[in-house]
Length: 514
Image 1 (spheres, rainbow, N blue to C red):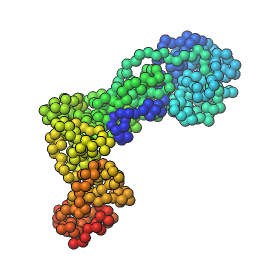
Image 2: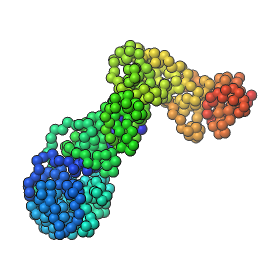
Image 3: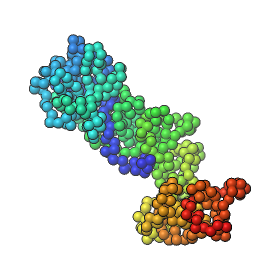
Image 4: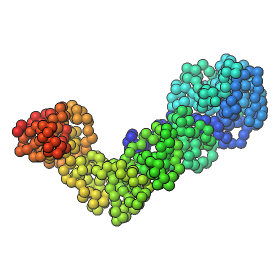
């Protein structure tokens, strides 16, 4: 997707996504393998499912009561009974019993914990569910626990229980325990899985993702997953690295729903467009996948260069380059190789600019000539100039689009020399070299790096009829005959309030007064 991290999401790394965690979906899912037998081998997903059962049943703490698992086998409703239930043991051990029990192994480090292991200290035991951040264990961990007091604490896990309680330990808390592992616990088997749209998948690390447009959208924590409406969703366990093997960006034409307010967006070329209810109806009321607000915020408003959009109302196809749109005729679309296009509402296309952003590079499909675009003008780059600019990426476009550009950028364009990095503001055919302080004072505007040969075509004196605004005080000056004249507000109004270019005072100072 094209993003505010602008066009970088297509190369999003697994590390960025790995900050996700186990969810209620994970813990309420059916195990991937056959259910265990008493005191037999058990896979990790089943231990979590068994623990979640008591959360769902609203089991309250008591050392004198016993309650059943889903098959009716009873366990004592305290911390050690809870872990005994999760591991499907034949009896309810107490914490002293777990300490001396030969059926466990003490792990070498708290960092070695996996979902379904346990943490034990004198008088208390809890089932480990997952790290809050698999990449930084010092953020703490989610656990299943029954802590007491009697009739004051309910079975709790990663997702809030009916009393708003969550099983969570800080890093300091975790370091008061010994990490232990049931000797008969097994990792879930690796089974080929085909991703299904809108379904949740969990890797052994605890990373959870929902599939949207064929891509995994990972959750950054419990609150985010619950907010997206997946607190009770089913989960499929998948092997480590499975999520990274999928496409990392939703395909064009995917519809995403904001978890915050239900707004629906269509995705195309890495950009999002918010559909009005009428536009959603126009598009056929397509299904949408709930995703975190954070995920939507990563998208830009303008699609990536080379994206093709098809207006749903009439089938017109538009080419996108530099954030701008160009309407392709059927012949032009065919000449470009009949590229695939994404159906979108006309409002999406209308929201895009008619002029590419400064520094866009367009290649004429008729002759292969590459042009740099800035301020509505084009400059034909020689092969040497193109290479000197770093051989930037370009978009193939029809010659008719290039023909629509002028040869002189609009007043107020900013050009940067590739030789020394000098930035110039242009107005009336003249250029002015901005100092770093002046450039910052003007708001650090967007610039285009262009060959010095183009910059050298500019003079030092704006043409007659140019209007300059002193950025220090807003005073407007008109240039005539190589001299400037200060316009009063009334004079400027009488002239029709012509557009003026913001410039540093030093630029004005070098122009003689009329």
